[in-house]
Length: 427
Image (tube, rainbow, N blue to C red; front, side, top):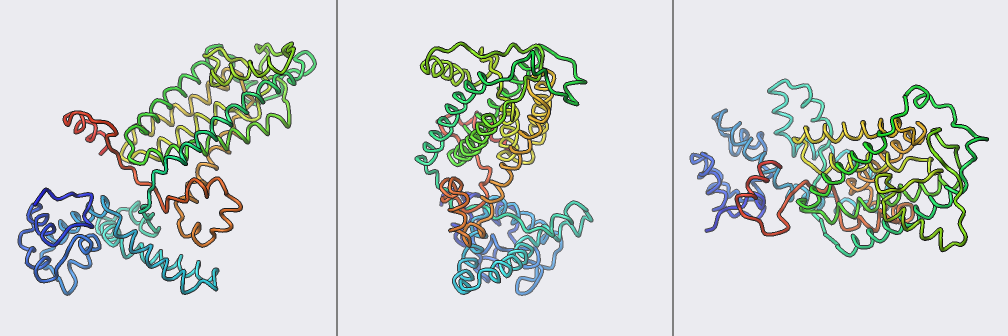
C-alpha cells in the first residue's frame, strides 16, 4: 500500500482510514470506526463533532473528541469535494422537482443551503461557542462557500480572452491618439478646480513612482499565476475584467474631453498628415503600455484613470488568489495601491474624479464578477438570463461551478528541496 494522499480523502478505503487513524494517534478508535461502522474516506469527510459524541459512536473521552474533530476538520479544509458533490446533487434534484415554480425554489434552496451549511460546519460553530470568540460567532451565521468541483482549464477560452484583452488595448491606443488631438486649448481652458490637486504640490517624479508600484504589483501577480494550480481560469478572469474596464474607458474618453489637469503638461494637437501616422503613433503607445517611463506622453485620456484601474485590479487579484494567512503580502499590496493613487494625484496627471470613478468601477466590477462566479445556484437557475445580460461572463465561466480554491503546484520540474521551501511559504 502506497502512502495515503491527504488531498484525495474521498478516494480512501476503510484500510486507508485505519492507517490515518493510527498515524494520528487514534489507535483506540480503529475498531469502532473502521470495523464496526465501516467509515471510508467519504464518510470520514462528513463527520462532525456531534457525530463523534452522539450515538451510535458515542465517544466518551472529551479530549479525544476534540482532537479527532480537529483532525477531521483539517481534512475537510483540504478536501471539499465530497461536500460540494453532495450539495450539488441535492440542488439538482430539487431543481428538477420544482422547475415550474422558480421563485419558490430559489427561496427554498436559499433556506436549505443555509441549513446545510450550518450542519456541515458544526465543528466551526461549536469551536466558536467553546472559545467565546466573537468573530467566530459572527461567521457561523453565514453559509460557507462551496469549492468548485468543475475546474476545467479550457486553454482555448484563455486564448480567446487574451485576444479580447489585446484587442481592447489596441482600441484604447487608437482612442488615446484621437482624444489627444481633441484636448481643449490650455490657454483658453485652464485646469478645472479640484479639491485635491489644488492642495497637493506638483511632484515631477511622482507619476514615475506610480508606474513603478504598478510594475511591482504586476510581478507579484505573475509569480502567483506561475504557481497557481488553476492559472488558466485566473488568466481568463484577468483578461475579461481588464478588457471590459478598459473598453468602458474608451467610451468615456471619447464622449467628453476635459481640460488638462496640470499646467506642467504640454498638450497640443499633433500635425498628422495621414491616418498611417496616427496608426504608427497608436502602435508606439500600445507597445509602451501607455506608460510614461516607456516614453509615452498623451493628453485627453482623463475620464477615467487607466493607471488606477491597473493598480486596483492587480491588488484585488493578488488578495483574492492568495491564502488569507498571507496578510503581510495583502497589506503590502494595499499600501502599494494607495500610494500609487497618491502618486497619480501628486503628479497632477489626473483629476480626483478620474481616480475615484476608476477605483469604484474596478472594485465593483471585480466584486460583482466574482460574486456571480461563486453563486452556482444563480447561474444554473437563470441560465438564459445570464447568457443574455452577461454573455462574456457566461462564455468564460461556463466550465467553473463555484469558488476557485487557492491551490498551488509546480508547473515545471524543480528540485524537491526547493519545492518544500516554497511550499512552506504558501501554507
